[in-house]
Length: 295
Picture 1 (tube, rainbow, N blue to C red):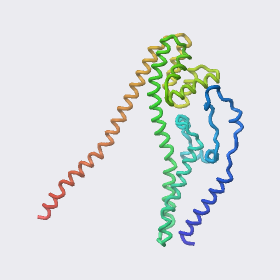
Picture 2: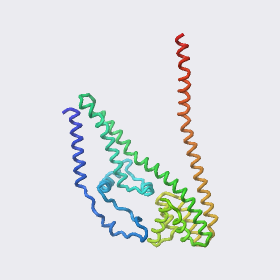
Picture 3: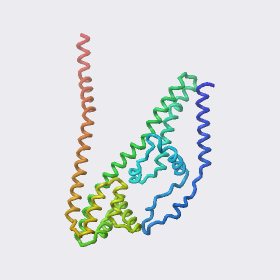
Picture 4: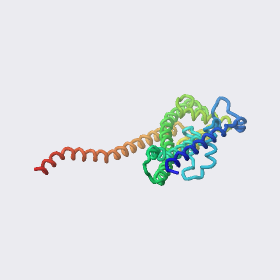
């Protein structure tokens, strides 16, 4: 059997198996999702159970591939981005399979016209490309989560000022937290509102719900705010100055981080700029050098 025939047979068998698995896998209703109560006025707080063929296939893959290198899931980042682990692992597997098959598919026309090529070449290239693409979703999610945390921190600086103003207006600690969250708009304030709704449903304090949200999303500043409001509730301490001070320090941290990022970007642009300057000088000097050599 020729190499082209072997590649065609493998692609046909793989495609047929994929179609067979897709037809056999059927989404089933989850009894746990149906029985889990939902807090009143907080639709969507409960974790959404996977539904649909993609999510079911992702769960199946998650149970079998989580132990592989790079298979550990960044749960905090996924929770921040509101992405399900099932869809994340499905994207990883899809990219890895695409990288595995891409060299063979790209070389298929060459093989069909009779071009010679050692069999290990597309196999090794596919393994290398597939292994590289396996880690691409991790990098993408980590970068998106970093930017989302930065955006959340900007919103939180404004939220701290609102809480301080509510406390200065003689609002209680719980009322100040909830009313300040209800004023704002955007996904960050929506997450705060959901955290307080979950706290009411679980019959815990608002600052405890805030601390749990900070731990869930890896946002230590939320835990700092929770500690300040807990102190205010326990001994009636005046927290206006503490909240405004924490807001100022948070803004300072964000500005310093932005300045550091800008400096890093400027340093990365130094090498390409120097290379471009060298190329321009060579281009200008080339005619003169050629003239000197030819005379």
